[in-house]
Length: 313
Picture 1 (tube, rainbow, N blue to C red):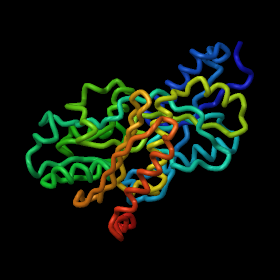
Picture 2 (picture 1 turned 30 degrees about the vertical axis):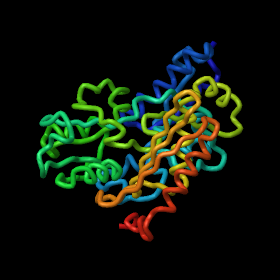
Picture 3 (picture 1 turned 180 degrees about the vertical axis):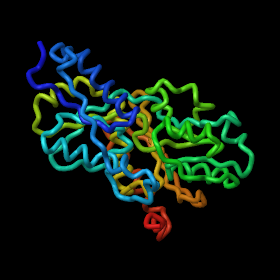
Picture 4 (picture 1 turned 135 degrees about the horizontal axis):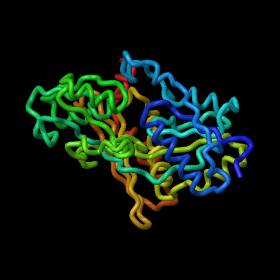
């Protein structure tokens, strides 16, 4: 039987965001017979600040929650019931009144090297131009290949692929997870190993938020949570919280769980790639938040005075 009030899912309007929202909707329908009817779930598209500003890089815009604030506001106002986010876009501190009860099973967290001229990043000739909107990707590229040129490249996945084909850049990097979810994995010349390109915190993970007191939403979302992915994301976000990361801060982190061993690697790097600090720690799964915090504090204690001064530039 159809719910009298449809479950309203808030999301951004990009093709990838919509694909993620529909994935959540399909999982809810599969797990809850009351939601099986199409009318039982409604997708609500909300335009965020990050979607509206396309003439500047996210680092230039600054701040946190560029892809979440308007969705959070709609949720708190009761205009939507749950919200679907790429976890790499979610600030480490949620607004009062919102909780994160579900993280879906994580997709491939690696970055994809996309190029029509070379199969590997190492094969690009000196002076080649790589387009990316990510300071993290650009900084790691320049750290390994200071002979390359990094150029800002904004837009959704399809837009960036088009700009690549038009010759605006020689190569670009995108998340393998996004390509997989859009059925576009064939565009990747290679998936970069995490040793070559450490991912963004929580890259490849979809998170679903709801209001803290919404018992209906909490019960529905409990069935979607993937324990291993949640543990990994908790560790990575704890690391990010210590370093107070934003779009102006090139930070990377990856937690991996093997049995009862949770390993973590973290990286902080200047945008020009000239200075980088990394860390590797391991602990138990039930120590995820503590492990991430410890990694962040250890790394923070090793940074030179003024290391983060570039964030205001």
